[in-house]
Amino acid sequence: MNRFNFNWPNHLTFCAGLKLYYLPIPFEIKSARKKVVEACPEHLNLKGINLSAQFLPVLIKFSLVVRLIGTISILAFSQACKPKFTIVERGIEAQTLHVGNGLEPQDLDPHIITGTNEIKILSALFEGLIGQDPKDLRPVPAAAESWTISEDGLTCKFHLRDNLYWNNGDKVTSEDFKFGIQRILTPQLAAKNAYLLFVLKNAEAFNNGELNFDSVGVSNPNESTLILELENPAPYLLSLLFHPAWFPVHRTSLEAQGDPFARSTSWTQPESMVSNGPFRLADWRVNEYIHLERSPSYWDDDTTKLNQIFFYPTENLDAEERAFQSGQLHLTEAIPVSKVGYYREQSHPALQINPYLGTYYLQLNTRNTPLSDPRVRTALSLVINRDQIVGKITKGNQKPAWHFTPPDTAGYNTNYISSKNVDQARSLLTEAGYPNGENFPVLKYLYNTSENHKAIGEALQQMWRSELGIRVQLENQEWKVYTQSRENGSFDILRSSWVGDYLDPSTFLDVWTSDSGNNFTGWSSPQYDTMIEETRHFADVGNRFSVFEIAEKLMLSQQPIIPLYFYNSVFLKHSAVKGFYPTLLNYHPWKHVYLETPKP
Image 1 (cartoon, rainbow, N blue to C red):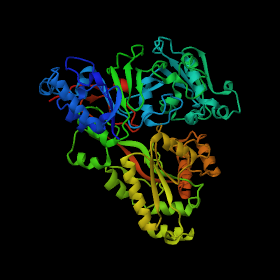
Image 2: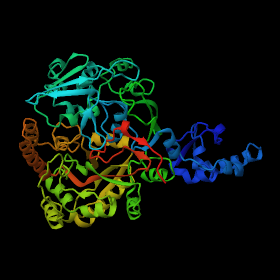
Image 3: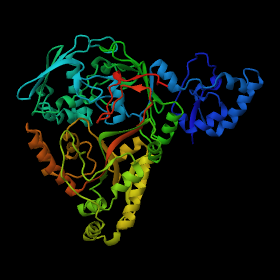
Image 4: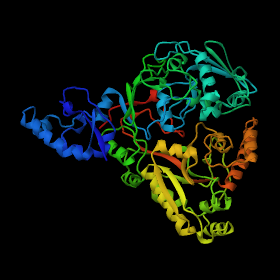
């Protein structure tokens, strides 16, 4: 059922500067809304009770009642309220950015989140020690105005600015950063991204409950100095510090809501959240929007140009694309795969296709028979026509993937080579005891709801059935349910994606260690774990990369995962959006983004 919100007493408003409301839910019924008020559908106040599209005849009758009682005729309303300005155009004038953001955030706790959609929002609300250049993401001063690194690469000293403030007026100090590190590493929080701080001396041991926090390599001799002591040299450290896992948090505001080391407290709600970034959390309507407002207490407020940002959950890509075309979004999260070809053929100026440090892949549940047999897993990989997937389904210049780490990740490349080989796949399946797929059980292929994921799943389903005689049942789930099924291992094949957290191959290859919180395959290799651990002790880049390559080949030879393609970022951008540059991590420092009326 398509639902939208409707405020009965204010369902029509005049054009004279009244506050207008917009929610993303009515994307699905925009064409139907036009039938009610053709002149300016954006002037509907879409807040209040829920109504479904089946009530549109009632609304039409009500609009006639409005006409009959003389408030205003529909014809006069149409002439007076023609959409002189769309939401996008009004946003340009007011420096209010409207962004499609994919899935509804599961949390806005920087130490809990794992999704890229949440990182986008948190990078506007908080700021770490190090910032990013908007064009190439090179490290630039942020909360730390300067830093020094010792010759052996084991000690980093950061000097904080004097004019750092939380949005409640409290001063930001080195203690806030130290507490943030303690919090994410505390075992009680069970933060999946805690491993991103294991570069710190004794951080992993503390996270495992083996040592006290006093042993961890972080200290603050005064309120403007933070010292990090590393377990081993980490040439990627500054890039790593971009991640929300390293963000400070305001201890007092967390304690006001309960145990600061506990999950699911209310400190991330608009009335409770205290943050230190260029924007503050003004409102959060679950499954509707997240509204950020510019924070005047931010140290670099002069650079910030946007006054507001609205992030809309846009799981339905077709609806999101229609919203963009009708002037309701400045930026989309993605594009339906069925529409990419059209935009490319038209050389549409809004279409953006940029390299993106990510991999689309499948996780195979090695705990389940017959996927416990590496021969079966390899057979499934060998019959996949990856060229067909990127050429006829995704159509966004993606590159087929046979290995996990994207090419040239900070200079790292693997020479792992494989290709489609149906004969070899059938031979492996026969060796495993399933000639022509005989007696092979139906596999459950789980994906989160998306037309794009569905299209890929259907293509794979057909390939496995026609080439190997293996039947696969597709099952889609909404994101929250999907993540629970993923955690519980309730799948045979799991649609997955991984986007690098920083510019180093370790952000990809750390995922497949035995204790990784992102490894849902059940696959474990002590040999692989040992090699990944060894890479943390090499100062020489060449030696590190050599061991990474051996480890990646070992993992791929066991095939707990099936890489399909390397991502490109494919989305729509309005010509008014400035300061939003293509970057490999698809990070965009929001304080540099602004809106400018397009030239005719």
